[in-house]
Length: 126
Image 1 (cartoon, rainbow, N blue to C red):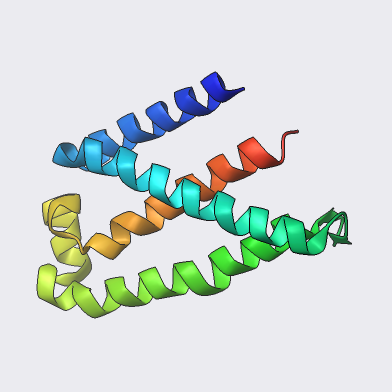
Image 2 (cartoon, rainbow, N blue to C red):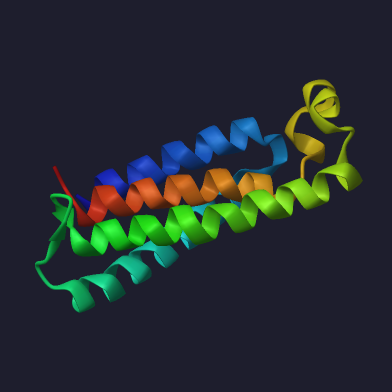
């Protein structure tokens, strides 16, 4: 199981490294950091919720998804929007220059989502 997680993290880092050209090691470390944060939050909720379910999902998983979707993502997207005018010429600049000049919070949106999905794979196996 741990081998599969390591393999998934490596594939994620490789994909992110290809997408972000020179940021491969940073991508891997960032995905690992977001994964660790999501696991910590899920474990905190797991101890608080016990075996309670919400909408047929474990309570800890449901609450962790709220934290991810209502706090982490809006903060990162807001930071991206605020930094966008200083880093590139909007969407047109993004289409011309790609990821290289995009604000760092936009990269972390992707890292956080990958970390969140890896957390579900580890803590909530099918």
